[in-house]
Amino acid sequence: AVAEPASGELSSSTTSTSNTNVSSTEIISNIVEGSTEIFMPALSSTMVEGKIVQWLKSEGDEILAGEAIMVVESDKADMDVEAFEDGFLAKIIKEEGETVDVGAAVGIIVPEEDDIAKISSAAVVDVETSSDAGINSSTTTTTQTANSTDAAAAAS
Image 1 (spheres, one colour):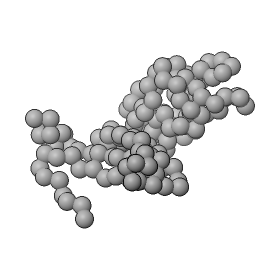
Image 2: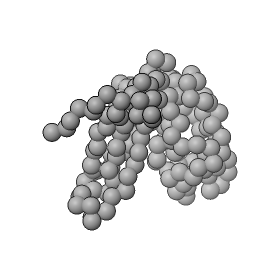
Image 3: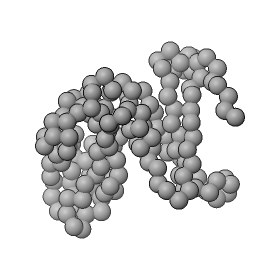
């Protein structure tokens, strides 16, 4: 049984994965129906990771399909990466200068501007686990959400 958090505490849920990979961003993006993860694309047949050189959009900006949203340095050159759909950039998961594996989530797009706050209020923590912990999983993902009054109370 899960106890309800006392006033001022962060509520949290933990998801363990055994044979499937559930990314922390999948959990976050499931908060808003119609949200989409932005993945690091393979810009060449030999590319295994890319470096985010620059985000051309900021969190909260409107995005149109076909519009360049970030510049990625591949193993061959720097290239613009375009959005595949319309929406709003709700969350930048990987910052400029970070190197990211191809296929890893780097951001989240939501369909409506009002949905940005729902994604922004969710904090994600990835915790690597070992077999010594007695958990048959490679990753445990913890998602914590709190409204501003709960966060302020928890900080004091």
